Length: 301
Image (cartoon, rainbow, N blue to C red; front, top):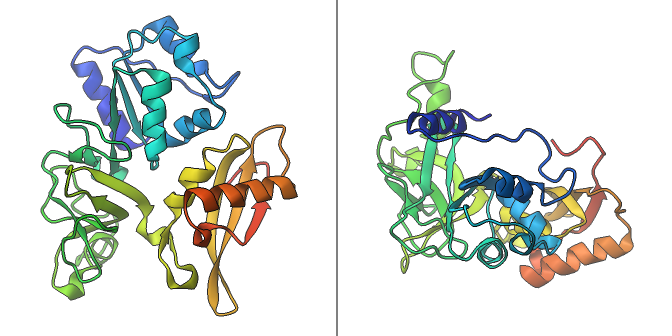
């Protein structure tokens, strides 16, 4: 369990809440097992992942039609980027009058950079705003704060829960500085750079996360965030997990995909064509992988 989750659970106990933990595959013995437990135990706040929501959306699951979710008040989602369609699916098929709280941060800061602001509206595909005490901005390549375009997530001021050193580092804190502070050093900025691509929306104040900036692909010189591809593939019922990489080939970068399939499916030419077609329809032709391989049964690292 990540450290930040442990702290949140302890905080929940401190205010008198009862914690319900589920250990195991949330899809076993059937995909809507979590909702069966929510109904049975009267769960009020459900913590989940984008991958789980995308999977349910991909198979057309309709939890509200089968289970009584009247006590469910809030869903808190994290771990990876949830597509705008995922937001809409939750309100359409889970419950219309709940609070959907998408958050993003890091174990290394033991908290969030962006997340819930209960007095503001929820917009599809956006975290509601900066977290308390987090001076978050989006920097372009020249270390200028920008809005409405993909850019690097930075924090311009010390945060209450940020780490102050690495265990075993030297006296100059070389590893610590290299990990978080050196990226914009030569642009004259001493800021925490976390390694995520975000968009800060000027009209809503919300923040969209596009995945890791160190996982960006550049086929034909065009910058593509891997989350843009994962958001689409996770919605396919055949795919349990996936990984995309950039492969240097003939002077360019081509996208290569590895997929871990759900039980009962085979990566034949028809499924490869479906994956490519779906990615092309929901993103762009440049996002389509040139090659698709099936991952080994023991999963993707």
